[in-house]
Structures are given as C-alpha cells and as structure tokens.
Length: 346
Image (cartoon, rainbow, N blue to C red; front, top):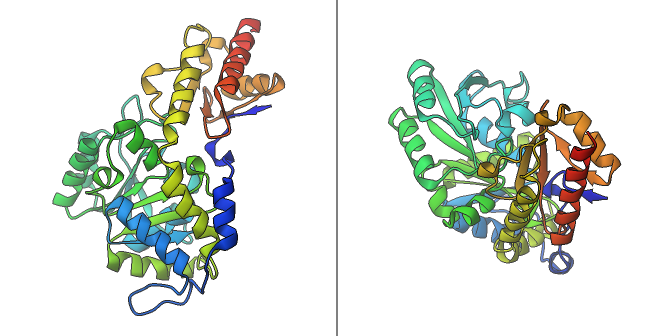
C-alpha cells in the first residue's frame, strides 16, 4: 500500500531518536522572570525557531492546531472579529477559535483566487467595512494544493492591515516548504507578520510539536494562554531534541518531496479523465480534480485504495496527495500507474 494521505506520516530519523534519548531536560513549565523555562533543550529549540523566523521569541506547543489557537486567543478577546478565508486550515479544520468556547471569535471572510491565494482588494474591503482585530493567512495553502504566497505578496497584504492597526497571524505549518520553493529565507518571508506558527512534524519529520513565534511580550502572554489550554509540558526536552534535528537537518531535504510531487503530477497530467493542475503543483502537495472522470472524489479515493493507493478526498471533487521522506521515486511511478489504470477502467 502506497500512502499519500499526508506528510504527517513522516517518521522520525535515527538521529532524532538518538537526540531524544540523550536530551538534557528540566521543567519546561517553570518560568523565570524573562519567560524562559527550566528545560535547556526546549530553550535551545525556541531560540533556534526565533532565529529561523527572525522573531524575538518562540514557544513550543504540542501541535499546530494549538499553536494557531494560542495565537488567535492571545491576539484577540472573545467577541472580536478575525479576517479569514473559508478554506484556511485554522477555520475549516481547527474550529476552536471560532467556537463559543474556548475562542469565541467571529469570522469575517475575504475572497481568494483560483489558486486559493487571498485577493488584496477583498482583504481591504473587510478591513474597511468590518472592525477586525486580526487577519489570518496561510503559507503554504493546504487546500490550495500547497501553493505559496511570495514575500512581496505577504508584505503588501501586511501593509494594508498595519495601516488600519490590524495584526497579522500566519499559519506557516509548511512555511519551510514555501521557503524552499521560493528560494527565500524563512525570516524574509515572514518579516512583516506579527506572529507565525510552523510545524516540526509533517515534512520535517519530528514526532511531535510546532513552534509559535513573535515578539518577546507576545510570547510571554502566549505562554499564559498555552497553560490555560492545558498545553504546558514538563520534561519536554525529549521532544524538543527531535525538533532541533528536524530544523537543522531536514529542511533542505524538502526539495526531494517537491520533485516527487512534480513527477507524480507530470505522470498523470496527460490523462484526460483527471485534472492534475500543473500550475498549482509548487511544493509537496498534488491536488487532483476527479470530476472529469464522472466520479466524486470520495468514490475515486475508494477506487484508488482498492488498487493499493491511499489518498484523501478533501472536497466533493478534489483529491489530495502529499509526498514525504518515506515516498521515493518508485512509489511515485507506481502511484501514477494506479491512477492512470483506474481512469482507464472508468
């Protein structure tokens, strides 16, 4: 079975396991006056993440979902409005910030183009018409097939927000993929956003953890929010050690995932019964439109799985496939063969 459901299937490397075994630990939940905990490995990871993103400080959280939730709840009070797009992961999947509890925030929607990238004029409209306290962006865009916002695009949108005194949070779960594709350092990509979350898992391969980065004062307050949500960890250096290896050793390898995703899309692009949207294949996600086959996405997903290929239906017509370290060129060629043969049988 070839499994392309998500890069969350990436497994920790031998180097990560060794680092976890040898990690120096302390009580990460006990803070000094500066907001630093007593776990030296967690502190080192947070310093590395802050340097990577060009922010003053960073905080380890158990998951990207918690990182985004902590960010939104720290930026905003219950009842305030947040500018989002309907397919942003923080709204479409995570929900908690926009539920009555614990977040209690109100969504205001902006529009996107055919690649799921925000339309600046739509963002300007909700800034002008609605009293939003925060604007959320996503890079890479999960439901946009892994498409990327460039540094110039992010900067222009941030300039619109900042003129109105609106803060900007970036869900950068796969920001390292975007940086590789755009050949732009992460800190340059996120320079103008107030806060950014990125995952240590997914393509980077750590078993657990995400990082929330921002100003020193924001992160101090965010740690209080994290405690409120039950996210404070103790001897978390065991997890942080794998995160350090993930950042230091796995970021450059992401280009291999991008190449494999491109190969997959190219191998099925000539098939007239499915649309691979080559324009949108930028990082490690391939989004297939199954509608030309006459099948809905869920039915087509089930057909592929019966032939040995696991994918994920993300809407009525779109199937998502994601490449990661354990998926090699032979897997890609076999996966494309399964897809093409299934199309021929319809």
